Length: 314
Image (cartoon, rainbow, N blue to C red; front, side, top):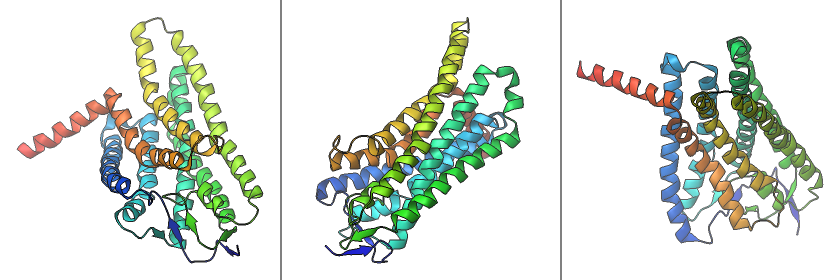
């Protein structure tokens, strides 16, 4: 079949679950509810961390970054997905596809680095408590956050440019509900070996190495916590890390399933559900995990709500 260049502004058709219209209607309702919860949950985390003086610590500074990232990540995908689910037309413009790929790759890569930075913060707090305030000073916090965001979007820029230089089959039918790199590679008619190798390198840089550093950090954390003699002290130490560790397992587990598992491991439908989980469900779970497991956030919410109710009474 004659190929056309991906830079052709003809747009793309996102097939999604178009072969299962009944499932699409269910997903439309479920994803709409999850998206609203995502917006509410992550916005609450950001506001509480900013408004409550007791939460102006390194941990909540990075948590606010994570919540803002999740807001941007899910918003770059879900509105277009809902639009496609509710009607027969499943198209996305060429520009829209480029922007979506660039933003989702950038934010996904940023989250990998940011979760690593958060692990380092927990390592410093538990393994070096006496020097914690000196190590995690405000300037370093800003630098670490900047490195996370910049490194994520540098990689995204390279990958997006390379993807849209590929010759693609003229039908431009993407067998997914979003412009993801693996799905775009499947519609390429030319040799994709170079880009597949580049994707492997990116996976090592943004998934394997960060996950390895997180595991090393938690290895030291566990060793330090086990040295604590009191049971309450151990519970408190593990409690400060539990939420972050759950988020790490969820996020990296989904990323590994989609990008690293052998191609024959899952059917395309299974891959779509895995992608759906980490792009839609995980950003909604993150604030829930941090609020349910974190007494400081609960108390901050109560203080703010109590303050607002008292103002209302006056």
